[in-house]
Length: 152
Image (cartoon, rainbow, N blue to C red; front, top):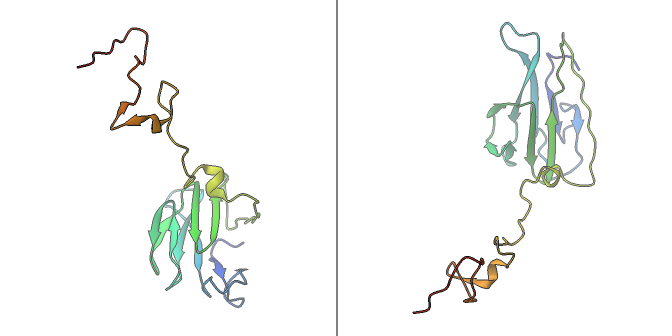
């Protein structure tokens, strides 16, 4: 793609380069624009939420309508039921960049361990957390061999 042209994603096939045929997606959902920082030979990228209705979450921060954020080298973006894992490969660029979309069987958030429910904690004793009440073990046996229990 030419660096001067924004990459738009949404339902509108006339204005968006990448079209999602899904009514839950806005006609213009998001825009990614390449730019060059002063004195740099590398392209940087900015993402902008183009939707009035659907929120865009970039790296855990919500962007409202027309708000922008600079993209890190690797960042997770979410809108509606979609997730995009965006990463930039290093390299010098003149006036173009390439875009590759892949569909995954597993959502990127699960692969990265984001928003994955945790298993119940296990104490150093190997006992489940459920065996404790108010932070104290239910059993009155010593937890380690050098501990003694004093019953009052």
